[in-house]
Length: 473
Image (cartoon, rainbow, N blue to C red; front, side, top):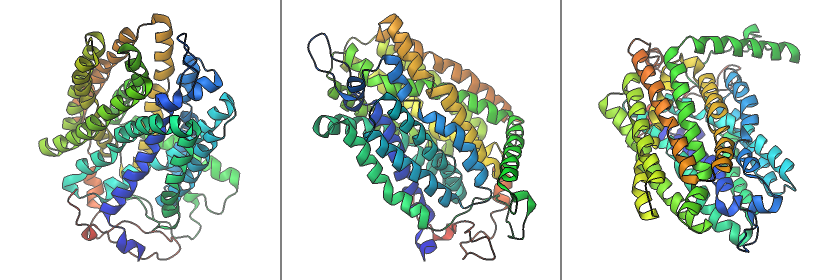
């Protein structure tokens, strides 16, 4: 049976591959090879997206953030739908839209059509990022939850960096459009798995009997269902707002994500100009540093949290300290370094600190809210960190650089915002001493969880059986 093959460890590996492809797309469009540049005064020809469509720095920055439109609209919808439909089936719908929109980028004929495709990319991403981490949290062994989440989230920096590298290699050889076609093709088998694999449910999900439960909106017209969904989402939002640890964690993560997004988009281009590197060389070097520090930093954050005790207070303390370290090292890397050889160690340590935040901050988002609200909580987290973080930060940094005309100063100013994130995380850690940890409620419902065949009218599989899992991750 498919459910017998799909152990928790294999589910984690599948989610990691999907997550990496999502962020490869982010790295591809930010790479110098795909992103490109206008013709230079030294006689170098225009190339890439910027060169072909003649974009300004601000327009270029908006390309990195256009996905937020689709994400903002669809993330709460998928989170609410997860109360009524299997999580993997919802992922299949979203990833199908992601495949079509990334392929559409390859056929764009101007800035407007490309922006529309990038907006739809966010719709597909929303289904995956809001549901995958709760499923991982459900199926991971209790003593290794932080490490499993770290494994999942390390695919973000690795995917970004791989996107830099692939964009720098593919675009000169096949053109920038080919990079989007290749990543769309790579996602097809994963979307197919979500469509035909076991229809897994999340813990805490109410079990509907199929007898016309009015709370689910069954048997009602479309207008009633929409009204019910909006009412339920607003009620969930009010509940989340009553959890100060969750709110402060979202605030700190939004500021941190803004800095990370600005570095992810502008870092290779800033490094290429400050240290007189070729665009392809900057893609490869920044990509290599990001891969190494992303893997090591994300794993370090997860392992450290498991070792010191995976409490919310400890998780937020790690986030606070890591932001301070990241701010100091990144400012030194751009403000002081006179060569790339001097820049690289400071930059690597700064990135190591930033990526150590990934697992602890997302763990707090899952543990600080009731189990049933985890998908909606992750959806709101994702919306907030993008809307207040890496959506405005690339165009804002592009605008700042257009005024200052000094990448060293612009990147240093950007890095100082990490100190604000540290203060917010610190306040969250203080509140977490008295705040409830909802893992206790979730674990109380774990007794007797097994993989079963669908029964009654639900047609859903509740959870994977942890006894199937022998992974040492």
